[in-house]
Image (cartoon, rainbow, N blue to C red; front, side, top):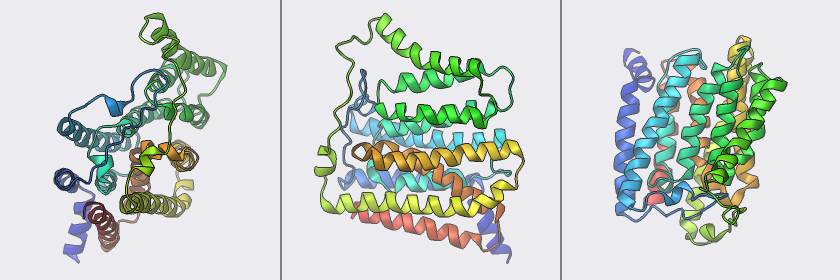
Length: 327
C-alpha cells in the first residue's frame, strides 16, 4: 500500500517531469539517428517567415525545441500554481505534456511554429487569468491581442484564435466596449507598425498557399502513426474532459471560468485541426498541452493509491506510438 502511494506521488512530483524530460531528450536523439524526424517545411505566414524557417541547423533546431518544450512544461505548472486552476499543485500535467510531445518525433525533434503557439498560448493564458474581475483590464487585453496579431504574420493559424480570446474576456467578466476597443487596437497595431517601419511591404502581404504536399510527401507508415497519435490524444482529451465536467461545475465561479477557458481552447483546437487539416501539425503541441491539463486535472482530484496504473497505461500507449514512429 505504501509503495503504491509513493509511486502515485512520484508522478505528481517534479522529479517525474525531470526524468521524463531526460527520456524525451534521449528519444529525440534516437529519432534523429534513425531518420524519423520529418521536416515540416510549411511557410504559412501572412508576411513574415514562419518559425519553421528561423533555424536552419538541424541540431540547433532540435535542441532549441526540446528546451522550449521544457519551458512550456514549466509554464503549465506556473499557471496552475499562480491561479489555482486545478485546485491542487501537481507536476503530472507537465509530465504528460512531455510524454505526448515525445510520441511524435517530428513535433519534438525540430523547432517550428507549433511550439511557439503552445508557448504563446501559455503566456497569454496567464495574462487572461490575471484579468478575472479586474476593473481596468484594457492594457493586458491590448497586449494579448497584439501578441496574437503579430504572430499571425508568421503563421496564419493564430488568426483563428482571436474570436476565442474575445469570448474568453466574457468568461473572465471583463468584456465591455472599452475592452473590445482595446482588443481591436491590439489587432490593428502590429500591421500598422510593420508597414509603417517598412518591415513588411504591401507586396509581402499574402494569404499563404498551404498545400497537401507535406502530407503526400511522407510514407504511409509515418502518415498512419501521426494520425493515430493525434487521434488517440483527441480521444484521451474528450474522455477526460467529459469525466472532469461535473467536478468543474462544483468549483467557485473564478475556477469555473479558468477551466471553462481551457475547455473552450481544447474544443476549438480540435475543431480547427479538422477544418485546417493541411496545416494540422501546427496545432499538435497546443493540443498536447490542453489534453495534458485534462489528464492532470482528473488524476489530481482522484489521487488514489492505484491511480498510477492508469497513468502508466497512458505513458505506455504513447511509448508504443513512439516506437512505431521510430522503428
